[in-house]
Length: 181
Ligand code: DAT
Image 1 (cartoon, rainbow, N blue to C red):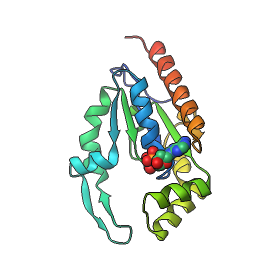
Image 2 (image 1 turned 180 degrees about the horizontal axis):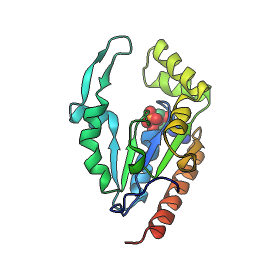
Image 3 (image 1 turned 30 degrees about the vertical axis):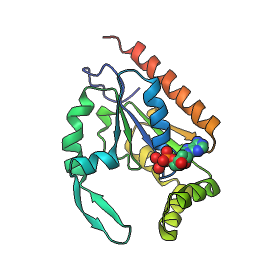
C-alpha cells in the first residue's frame, strides 16, 4: 500500500466506518471474535470515557467531540497496531497510522427501519439517510486516505455482514504475513 508505514506496527489498524445504522458496531463485534490480539475502540464510548467533548449540540441532541483531545488519547494506542476503530467520522485519524478503511453502506429503506427502531427522531433519521444517499462517509474516506486502502462494502443483510467480516479477516492475515516481525 502507498501509505507511510510505521515500522513498529505488527498488526494493522482498521477503521470500520459508515453512516450510523450501517452496521459498524455489529460488524466490529464479529470481527473482534475472529481476530487475535485486536483492540476494539468504539469512538463514541471512548470519547465519553476520556471526556473528549467540547460542548453539546442541542439540535442534534448529541455531544460534540473534541477531535484534538480524542487524538491525543488515541494516538499512542494506535502506534501499537491491532486496533479496530468504530466511528462514523473517519477523516480525523492520521493516514500514517491507518492500514484499512472499511466503509459500510446500506439501502435507504433498511437504514430507515434500523434508525427508527433505534428511536432516532425524524430529523435525525432524515439527516442520516441523506448522508447515506450522498455517500458522505465514503467521500470523506476517499478525501483522507490513499484510495487503495478504502473498501466500500454493502451491509444490508446478515449474509453480507458475514461475508464482510470474512473479507476483513482474510485481508488482516494477509497484511500480517506481508509484515513479518
Ligand atoms: P452502527 O454501529 O453503524 O450504528 P449497528 O451495528 O449498531 O450500526 O447496527 C444497527 C442495527 O442494524 C443493529 O440492530 C444491527 C442491524 N444490522 C446492522 N448491520 C446489519 C446487516 N448487515 N444485516 C442485518 N442487520 C444488520
